[in-house]
Image (cartoon, rainbow, N blue to C red):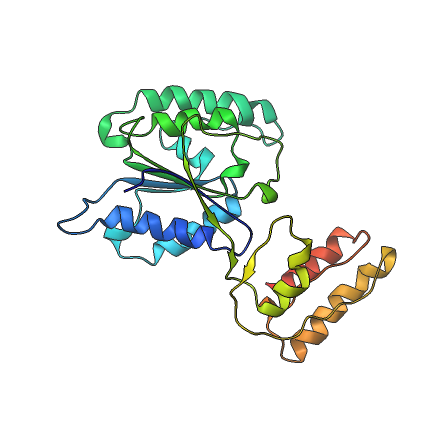
Length: 253
């Protein structure tokens, strides 16, 4: 079994679904073939972490990973501290150094057989030390990361200092074929449509100040006409007021 893997793929390719399933399979093991493992499933984003926690909460107890949460929460379980929200030096340098030192001192029963990192493109170089130190065997224990360089939000450009076998996901399973065909050409890498048929895509021409009200009005009209929120995809030009954008987002759920 491969124990050092990087799964790469664009949005809609199923990375998070696979990360969750892998965490479940490794945790429960398989009778007579693969022993149950102590697994951590971590990410950077608070929103993504909450989603992962909700999914795992519905599983049988013996299928749930030992830890699910953000990188910061991963350190807090060992006693890592909190910093001011705007103190980037703490989050980017002080905290990972503190976490690395704490991880080195963990007893074997508190370490992990495997760590799974979703949206790994958001991790900095310094963040990988505590991840590796938290493994029971830094050289052999499982490290599985899921990433998409095209979804990078922060200029961290971190890479784990170990060799990983790359696996590529190039099928879009999330979106309908209509959405994929309309917006696929805008993506930096090619994805193959594997979603089902859906409603036609409607383009609403707007720019500048016109975009302030048009998008929300259109969303409201489409929902009232029976469109499902997941079949509505907005693409506007120009800047929109934050309150207007939040209102539209609430309508889309």
